[in-house]
Length: 224
Image (cartoon, rainbow, N blue to C red; front, side, top):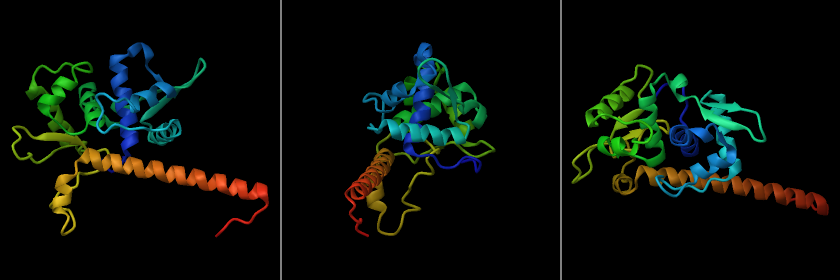
């Protein structure tokens, strides 16, 4: 991972993935409005994990990505629209952006799965072409953006995952006594749990603010 780019949250990568996907699949609607982006983030099909992000959460993700120049906001009409700036910031070609988008939207996949899933974004000639771009992404001088995962028992191919959310947790680096638990939990499940925790923390903060306002209106001193 490039030292110039901080670790992104699951929702931030989902936003980037949706923008890269919709740029190719619905070009007439791109750049996207906030409403369209929220719908794309919460889409039930072709997403792993499935999210239920609030509009305010997606807006916060956009604001964070904009500070990294990964998002471009355009004004005009009745609503602001948003586009991604992945190629320019990460210095990668559109083929690599297509692969990253699919990994951000669907989680770890084999080169064969990526070739099929990327069909609407970019048509790769064959699996070896996909693998070439993946290796290029993994061996970037500025820091790898993808990594090849260890082959799962019974699997014929290795899967790949993006590193925008940080390195994967492996048994080798897990604390003592947690190897079995790590093996039983997928990367997608871990990411979904993190997203749910962030959502709950935001809801708790909102409830606390409401209680403070209520105490103030009633003239009652809030409990410490």
